[in-house]
Image (tube, rainbow, N blue to C red; front, side, top):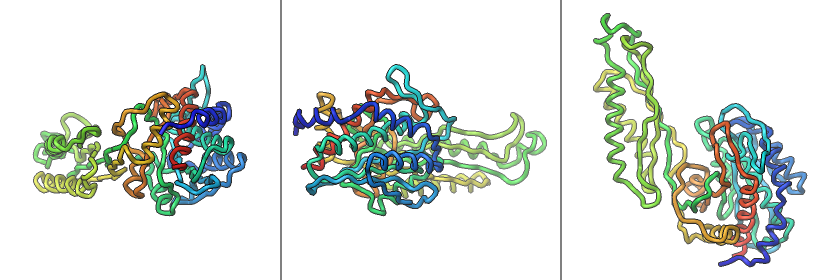
Length: 392
């Protein structure tokens, strides 16, 4: 249902670019690598408190850096929409914030302190304009998102503790589609080892169990499995996969090494069990260890599960109405190429989730950047989605 033009204009007038940008820069200027988000969470709580909001600080299983939560209620009852973001950044050299020619730079500007600032500004705009017709907004932010340093457990505990809405928006840097499905992800690591010491090939090395041959077997078996997984497809999300991106072994060309390590990923579609994928992984390793006379340790590190929501879910429809009001047309329905906390909200909490953020670049690099006008756009979309979703 189209949103009334007068409401759109009220929200647009209430979103203040300078205030939004100041918030983003104040968040970015506080370094917050994963597992070290206490200071930036305190900063966010301070900003919201100074804005007049009542701030909660649930530990959610991570007392080193309690999460941040704010609730804003309309006068009438209705749905609760949640704006959720992660305050932690990947472990790279810190880049302080700066603005040049309308672009915001700095660590977390695209992933995702810029997006968090936009959702804070959306909350302010709803309060200042008085346009939330019913229901409420729950704004949450947390640590422990970025793998491999974090395990996603703080958002798990927030869900378990009831810090959830009826639907959730997440401002990750995905802006060109409405993602209604996403694959699950596990990070794979394998260590192949043999007993003894490294030894020259002509001094007995050739007679030792070969960790490299065992590694080659693993690669071939994983390649065969990947071919099988390619038959499991979804028209939007593509195929299941097993990918190897790293292999390391040996100190010199003619020495028999004692250790080989490899790493990669396993991605799966809704309908595939993470436990079954884990079991399959370990069965392959156990078989090769026995055949080659080596020891193999495998780690199937679960990151997020697969999920799917309906494009006719009330949250998806409210989002499309809001996006159309801002951009002039709805987004194409598609798949989420990465995993994020939206996967967790759907799979663990049974809560529909839509990932949508600014058109930002440089995530997981030292060159993060986002146009300020994109942050303003996201703030408008979030506020209008709340109006449409909570008022139905």
